[in-house]
Image 1 (cartoon, helix red, strand yellow):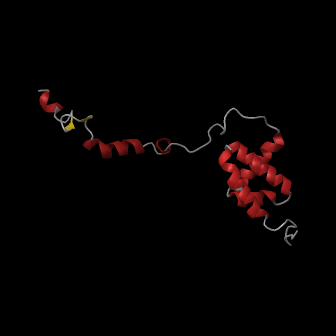
Image 2 (cartoon, rainbow, N blue to C red):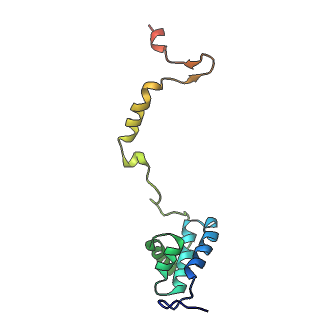
Image 3 (tube, rainbow, N blue to C red):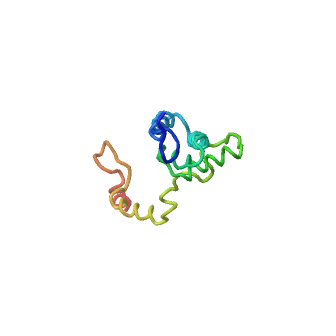
Length: 130
């Protein structure tokens, strides 16, 4: 077995890990993926977190969190993602976004599309209510 002169690990370990993760990750949820990466990193020892992060295409902090989860001995969570995880809604991040979008669309949208009359039902509602 040829060993890399820098780390003493077998050459090609990163490529092997990349292949393993590409095969495995589509079948795992977020937490399971973190724990799988953490187990690999721990088995590699010193420098394993960085190597696994590069192979998996994630931040080293993600692998470190997985290692901490493994070492804490936490049981399975009820949710896959932690509370507050995931992307925030754009409307929450930018409060003026929704009114601005509605202002752009509002002049053109004035009622429900009506198949029978070939246009919008409420277009002439103002002139009919005199």
